[in-house]
Length: 223
Image (cartoon, rainbow, N blue to C red; front, side, top):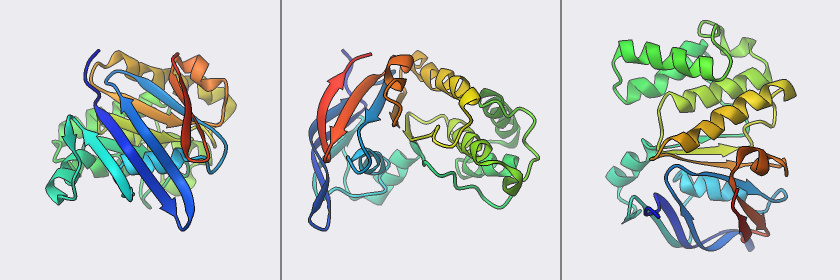
């Protein structure tokens, strides 16, 4: 088996006296799809935010590409260029869809021609092929969520983190998004980690499911 791309080692995070997350060790391997299941408050979102480097654990280590993640800003900026989190509630800029997707690509200094082709490809992937000129405020909740997913895909992250990405999407679109997420397994150097409340989704996706309760990993079931 290859080396894990991302690992959490004895990681603990509390909010006040409440333990939000406490895991002994979790390893995430390239080319794998993982789902996180469990009730609200069980630690799923906290895990994703820690992996996205948006939260710092009070104890333990994060290991990315074999190197311990430190407080060094240069290292953290480099990792953030490869790790993307899609929140449950889509946050879009007050602009058209094209500009929402182009923003991250501009920060990564992707040339204009490549930006256009990547944006067109990502919008087609999420079933919004003709939406580039639509304004963000004109979109439905489900359309906003798909734009947020497309905005993550254009960056071609090594780690794609998804926090309940289908919570506000119409049921008829869910198979399209599931097929899109399953496609990450075809890439040998990318992982996807998705929180979900749908108990059947891990099976449909063929994912390795990590069950959480009270901030702790209870089991890992391989799809």
